[in-house]
Length: 390
Figure 1 (cartoon, helix red, strand yellow):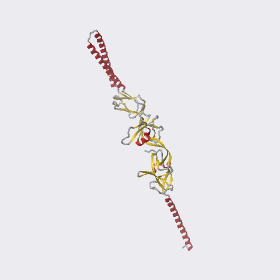
Figure 2 (tube, rainbow, N blue to C red):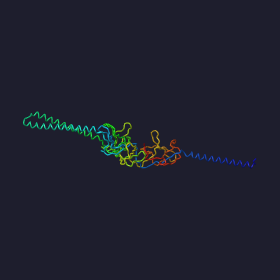
Figure 3 (cartoon, rainbow, N blue to C red):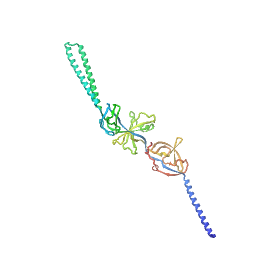
Figure 4 (cartoon, helix red, strand yellow):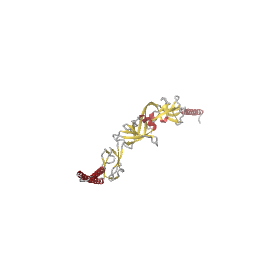
């Protein structure tokens, strides 16, 4: 058994341990309370104030400037093929040969008919000349000469008709060779030898120009008036507004284009206007049907105030942002928004440009709450002025 002195020592040790535990837990509680007292955890960034070029992006596609479906002018079986699909050809280059045996036979027949008509006409001229001499000596009547003159004129008309048939037959023979109507690249859906081609019906191959090309996209009425309409001058409805394009792999095409065609009317089903921009394509990079995001650049706003789209909240038709107040509490500020540029909205009024706006932690945040603010940058949040608005 412990002595009285030993019991006192054990009791003192236990008391010290209890006091230490109380102090430790009190300290942890104080830290937790202090953390809780720090307010809502939010991220905030400074309002951007900088010159901002207005830019809108639209999903578009590459179109050939000229595209022709090549058809034969005469019917027949394809007996020769001088090209292959995907090949570049020049205007006037032979593409196909149609069986010409029937057409050559028709040409020979037409030539024979012409020769016969010419011989008949020549004989009528000889007879007419003889009878005109006889008329001078009163050996024949004037009526006989008049009749023979009419017959000679009819024979001459027949010669002209036969000559026209020869010309048509020769044209048919010439048309058995199908030539490229323009320079460009052939499609790969070209027909094979042995195919029967019906005149004006069978498409032998499609040919399209590759330089320059169009990029076609649609814009809304308000955007047309803002970005395109201001450039339209009387007598010229084709503004030369600069356009850039981004390809499907995210790369930007190195050559700028310009608007050359604007549709005459808004599309009934979408309320949008079709626009075509022309791009030089010397290396053939742009292929018809390819996706291209068209970027239309407008005027530059000087010292524009920008806030991230995710910082903007809507309530009863009004827009507002939460900013960090001077006392560290949240403060709601009504803003008038302008154009959307990438990840941002242009703020027309409501901010001075010196504020910090809350960009994360808005879900349960209300005005007047204490906040524990972490300051972030646009790079931290992945915001960009060039992000597509599609």
